[in-house]
Image (cartoon, rainbow, N blue to C red; front, side, top):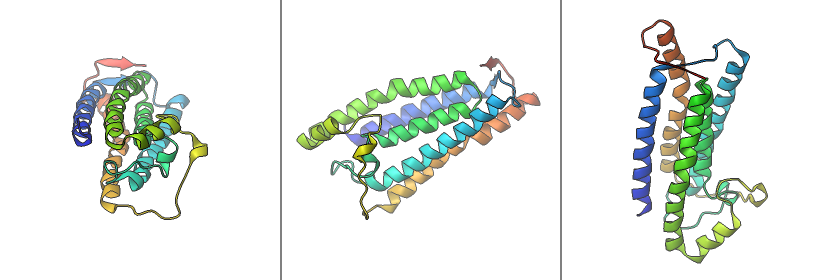
Length: 202
């Protein structure tokens, strides 16, 4: 399967899971009281991870946008980890789980990501190995898949970025900032009994 087809399949599966997660949030409330200190720490820690993940994805797009099918990119974030876009997405997803105030939702989001995306990456890497041969095999040997190896960092003084890919990724990254205000409004709706509460989750 080509990268565009893999991308479309991943986007479809991610949207389906997002809809299911939203449905769960609409009828659930956190067991932790909003005034608890740990709840505040989770919210702000989550927001920090969302910022790192969102802006990290935008930075990555400056290096990979429009090049993934043409060359093996080994600069910037791609010099320290093979899948920095997915790493950034994982940070943002964990951040959203923390913002919800529900450890259960955090576990579901992180667990779903950890189970699904290694399969996605394996298929992408098989395609890229077939396309680029020894160049990509060398990249796989030298650069880790998930945990950045910072001593490999290689950032050029100048780079020919493609603005439309950065703009598109920036618009996508904005979606990571939507859940926090939604959680606030949903909690208010639960408090005023506008929405039913079927589950109280830790």
